[in-house]
View (cartoon, rainbow, N blue to C red):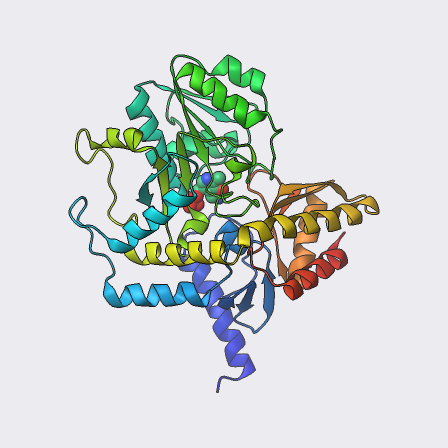
Length: 407
Ligand code: PMP
């Protein structure tokens, strides 16, 4: 048996090794070492349990280590791991996931090219739009976030993250989000792609007005530009619809997915109509990947999809999200520190008066055993994104702690 002090020094050693051997891109200390996770809870190596109101940042929509996802992973591991030679083998778990996805995506979007991550899926979507339209221009949005590889960074906002890596992809124009007049002026005959999040995640959980996405769709149609919707964060029931674009009945030309797609395993993809996807056949292998659509990730993704649909988690996300927002709005009425409560389903933004207040709230939540976080571009917005199947008891405990943690 390990003594308490042996355990404490083992934890200290792993934190030290993390700093020494793992590339760091944030100067802030990491609060704890993960031991295990299940459902809506994560346990630290020192034995504390935390309620996870971030869910791997919208990854664990069916909770951590769901038994059906685990069983699907094990069953696939017993068959094969990686067997890919691009274009040579049919991978059954890939095919089955693609077939099931085609039943839940908006009409016509029935072919997926699988990747390993969100940012790679964005790269593929941008290449696809260029290949189809032969046009150089891309219109992207202030506050938009699409990933950290060169193409994705080129269409992501915020100069401090872009400037150090310039020159980026040429031909990208940023316009204000939720502003159709700006879109009308910027999207023209040389625009190949318009890339947008249906609800901005890292931009601070920004929900556009109801005419924005339908208006953007109409402008793209008129100008012959492809509309790429980035649903990496908003997909798979997160916002109370299977895909957020369903809130507005908008069908994009390319739908980009990742995060919750793999049920906790790395998986992403860009989805389009067969006649659009077909352009990547010429020349053969216009796009390819070694690990994208890994059999184990696809098996996990398929299990996760069945849970989302079978347990009615999408509808539950809508109801639960409304209850959480109503709770915070009531708190906000008597609390000056909260200036706005917004979001859809279980993608929720709580806007604090200052970044200091938001930081204090996140810190206190953590001390009291709940994990919440900021968004990449907004220090004043605290984001909540719990698993869609968070139990009523865990939810109530979380809400109670939020009240105690308010600065
Ligand atoms: N698009 C959006 C909307 C995202 O929120 C993210 C990740 N936060 C990405 C793309 C990038 O995904 P990944 O981290 O898997 O590369």
